[in-house]
Image (cartoon, rainbow, N blue to C red; front, side):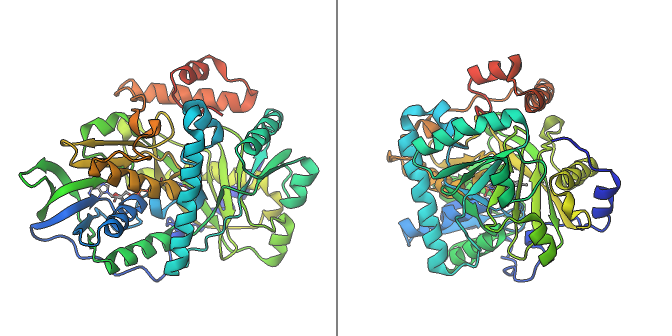
Length: 470
Ligand SMILES: Cc1cc2nc3c(=O)[nH]c(=O)nc-3n(C[C@H](O)[C@H](O)[C@H](O)COP(=O)(O)OP(=O)(O)OC[C@H]3O[C@@H](n4cnc5c(N)ncnc54)[C@H](O)[C@@H]3O)c2cc1C
């Protein structure tokens, strides 16, 4: 996207921004679950208290109410990606239709059915428990902001129709009649398959429900090592260990406790801004009456949405990988990424020139080379993992939790028989090769965004099944 906005506008808009996650900046957090202080035993220990970990704990209790489940969370629940995301929820388990078809053409009907069932069941669960997560399955609009993106919309529309999704091609006038932006040249309004929610309301709701079911949750309790034991496995922490028959690793992009996961997961920082609430005049200046999620069609894309209190959340584009896979709170405050994001915001909505941003944060996306999670077992089948949602885990994490429990049961299910579960992703090379390869790929993706041509490097990666086939 061209950056035509004078630098003074984003700078002024960011002048008073808080370095805080918007979703977490409110009252109503559940009380801290007491840290582990002594040795304990359980049937199942879950490491990680984000969506994957909490869905795993709840699902384990639903499958067997007598199962004694302990969740160990290194910080607070929702402090990882589950509390920092855009709140886009998608039925897709494959990071989109084209990507799924490119990788698992024969399994696509099953993957689509399972993905749809997952969101249907999730919506019913949220409804039954009365979790106020503002879930709306309004679909999304994909926006073309360059001519080659316009050309890509018609095949995408056809694919959506073939796969039973509801989509409508919008020309420049139609797309702008819906959401008013001078950058939009065309759009694809996809009414099915996705929606929006408030991710922290969901995480907190899951936590409360898990506690009601008798799950023991310990926050501020980092697992430092996993060992074998006679009974199964031991999750060691600084102040005690939990011995259990089995363990699920739901640690996403955090430093993995299993060595092999280091080669599958690339931690990439993604940046997000949230504005102050819009006035009725500002809302009418942009339209957007259906409040669906918006995303542009580039490799380096923005995702944006309205929040329940009429702010705009605007994220994406400038995804940053640091040498050695470093992550830290300092790296979450990369000034230039926020300035760039703000400048893109005002290119998109110049009519909102006076709007100010109130919140900014970054989160770590757990990227795999095939853009879908990796699943597997270790320690003779006593440990299972489900990590690597590559920025699309709000819905898929519930499916990931089910896969992890299926794998621990040792019984083949429709889920565990999937190629997506059985096959390993292509591993990322170790450092010092990894960093330059990531940078070269990023530069090639940026070039494609400008030229519309895939180029030699990306075509080569496509042949090895690495990256995004759009
Ligand atoms: C900025 C951003 C925007 C995103 N937007 C979207 C979106 O709009 N839609 C979408 O579908 N997806 C989105 N995602 C991705 C989505 O948020 C994740 O895929 C999903 O939250 C993954 O959930 P999780 O439980 O696996 O991981 P997390 O939420 O990261 O949870 C992992 C937990 O494990 C804990 N942990 C790690 N190591 C240890 C240890 N050793 N001991 C104890 N605890 C440990 C961590 O503290 C953390 O709480 C986004 C991600 C980011 C970062």
